[in-house]
Image 1 (cartoon, rainbow, N blue to C red):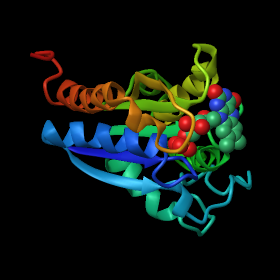
Image 2: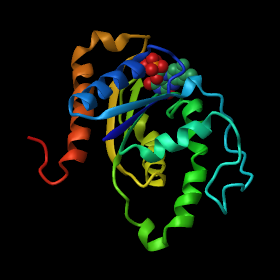
Image 3: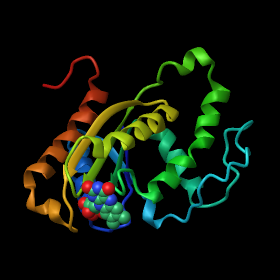
Image 4: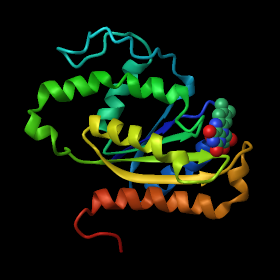
Length: 199
Ligand SMILES: Cc1cc2nc3c(=O)[nH]c(=O)nc-3n(C[C@H](O)[C@H](O)[C@H](O)COP(=O)(O)O)c2cc1C
């Protein structure tokens, strides 16, 4: 089973990178094959709202996003990681998500309104680090993530939210890295054994 990790921080080796590494280690321990997308390495524009995908479900903007679409479609489980920036995801992640308008169009073209009410399968999860603590820090991002995953025909499986500020602060919290490992492992097992649950 394929899982995809989307690294959404501009800071290489930062807290969300380390969290997502642990999540993917956990997924691998349950037998998943992982792919990784580092959004900071991508040269992408935002959606230019040209309507080019309306009838085809294919984005006409030729940039690094073109390599990401197949990865998004093929993954059964997606882990989207971003630090909180101004109570939201990073701008880089938002560009990436907005470019999935093409997949939103594709879903609308290929599925009836009735079929769009249910999900094809698979799940998406949100992983975030923030300097402060508090539920509202993640609320807006969760709404965006839920809608992003729905566009990919996936259910939103939940979030892993951690307090950490300076680069690498998360390393001082091994219990959070352990929680991240278990988060990835359990998300994978839920897909592999949907009826049986976790044992
Ligand atoms: C531009 C910017 C905006 C930020 N906004 C918030 C915020 O609104 N709330 C918060 O708790 N932390 C905020 N932070 C702190 C980061 O979320 C925090 O340092 C996080 O651990 C960074 O993760 P990373 O190492 O994966 O990049 C902000 C940091 C930056 C650089």
